Length: 300
Ligand code: GLU
Image (cartoon, rainbow, N blue to C red):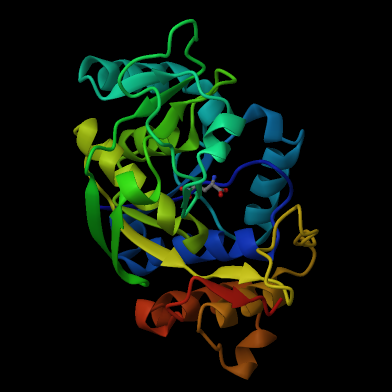
């Protein structure tokens, strides 16, 4: 059984960039054996509560419905799953792979080692907290973790996590769970076999694979789609004022997303409505057609 998912954060309405991840994960599920053999699940990643926007989750669900993208099973909300994340933290702690960290953002930035995702943690607290300091965050020891995986779109990815990222936070200083931990716990709980999402998360995947290994959870297959950028090279997002997808006329937006993903539906289908477009897209979906790029200029 193939089980895929779309896992948006409810920070605003869907825009072209997030619609690409929705459509890519949906088509990949549908192209893998149809309704009998695949499921496409929906998870609202509302764990980072300060970033949540009231009404955004419902807005996302309504937009998916307007596009004819029906999800399987109940929608999972991360905000209802904190016990599971806490249990995973305890499991990491009992294996001796967690440690409390007292460093402030400033102190870490001052260490001056730049990695692929901000400053590399220099390991200040890995041997114990400095005298008089209290733990703010919880970090995972990366000690020589070298992760290689085969991405269906981006090819072979290798990362030396200790060198390129450093010991990373799983329990945040503000008391919230980190995305890296929540996503791993949830992908396993939902028995996700295939993760299809934007390549902005490609650099996070080795951390997630490391956590899967430490927690003895299976590793799904990964396919990272190019991320949609604007003509200034910025990722489309709320911050770059990407415009919300309208629910009024989904077909032209769907065609734009398909073209972004390397699929050109025949012209006569453009007027035919959503159902024939989806059928054509499911039949023609192929990793080999998707440009193996980390980012690509948005066409929508
Ligand atoms: N919630 C994340 C986002 O919206 C996606 C997480 C994932 O697909 O793993 O960027």
